[in-house]
Every structure is written in structure tokens, then in C-alpha cells.
Image (cartoon, rainbow, N blue to C red; front, side, top):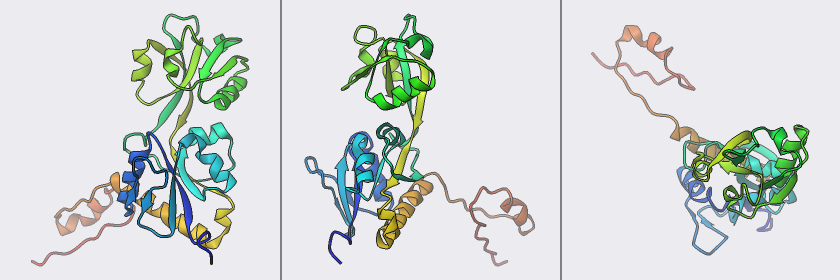
Length: 254
């Protein structure tokens, strides 16, 4: 078996998700080391090959089979329209791993309050495809402009409205923008190439990797509880515990 077939190629998101993804892999038992200039992080599993790629491009490379699996946002899966297998929602209580919102916004005091108000107007966004589909669903035709960044500063001179990602809303408020509509709520997703899932070895490796990542997230949201209770109240208390499995009960010597 060649080296190509005995290694799973994994896409690691570059940018805002990067550091939290590294910590997630660490909690899952991996030593993932990302150096400053290399796009090929080192990992202490000889069966994994990691590549650092922008989330915006990730789903397309997974669809093409360049990557076997990857972590990226639901927003970029929908934006690219890539045909990939979504295996898990990796939402977690960590920075950049929660829910982010893509919102339509315009300048405070502008006449644009509803989606319908943007008929024939100019909208700037990085997510052109997603925005066009959203407008079409509302029966609105507008002029779309791809934004290379700093989207929130464009209204009202460079654009009538924007569609941009917002986690806390602080940037929108700082630029005196009002939210007109929530276009999409997005969370990190674990995706895989359909062809890779048809290969026994790759599917087994993907399943194991995903199990470890999901386990790390689950562990971060749970606590271990130990208590001493009277023997006569054990069943009553066990029924109150929000556990996945029945707890371990040890009887103490008199």
C-alpha cells in the first residue's frame, strides 16, 4: 500500500478558527504544531497529513478530493455549494467555535429597514452566492459587490447595505449600523469527501478522528460529580442526574 493511501489528508482552518482548532486537537490527544510560515502543520500521528487552508476554500478542496476531511464553517459550505458529507456540528463553548450570524445591515437613519427596501440597491459582501440566494427567496433583485474586507465601513457611500458576519455585534455598533435581517446562523462543521468515505481504511480513520474530536468537545461541557448519599435515597438521586449512562455507585463499609 502506498504512502498516499495510508495517510488521511486533513484540512485545518487558517485564521480565526486556527488556534481553537489546535487546542481542540490537543484535547483530543494530538500534538498539532503550527509554525509561523508553514502551511503544513506537524502532528504526532503518522497516518494524518494536515494542511492549513482558509475556511472559505476548504469545502471545495474536500469536494475535489484534494482533502479527505476538514473543519470549516457551515457558511462557507453553503457559499461554495460544494458537495461534501457533513458529519458533525463541532459547536463548542470556545472563542470562534460558537454560533456566528451573517446579518444584513445598513446605516442607522437610512431608509433601508426591510429586505424589500433593497430592490435595485447596492449590497457589499464576501458571501455573494449566499446573499443572492437569500435575496431571491425574498423576491428582491439588487446589485451585488464582492467585498475584500472592511465590509462594515462601506455604507452609506460605497454600498447601501452589507451582508457580513457578526459574532457579538460590536463592530456593527461601532460603525453605526443597524441589523435588518439575519441571513444565516453558522457553526463549525466536520466535513468529508464522499469518495474517501467509500474507502474502508479512510472511513475508519475519519470515524476515529471525529470520535476523538467530539469526545473532547463533550468533555469540555461536562463535569464529574461525586457525592455521599444515604443508601435509601440512591435511586431517587440517580433519577435526577442528567447523565448519559447510569452512574457508578459504590457502597461504603460501615
